[in-house]
Length: 75
Image (cartoon, rainbow, N blue to C red):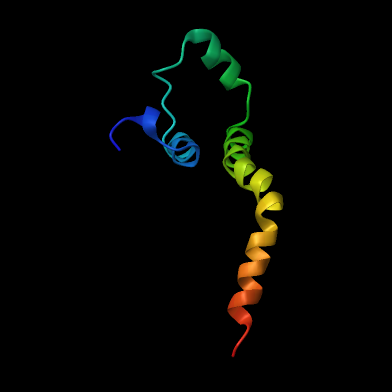
């Protein structure tokens, strides 16, 4: 994908964590960002990446367990 607006959430947040660009921010946003610790910012982005998975897993857990049990039965 060439455009960042077409990235999935996880890929987009990964690019933010790896290469953070201050050129796209205005002055007020840069001042607010300077008050936030860099490690806290990266941790919150990683949490946001994992949030959709954590929210959907409980609803799909029965299908994962059914597949595990079905795959482990020999015969």
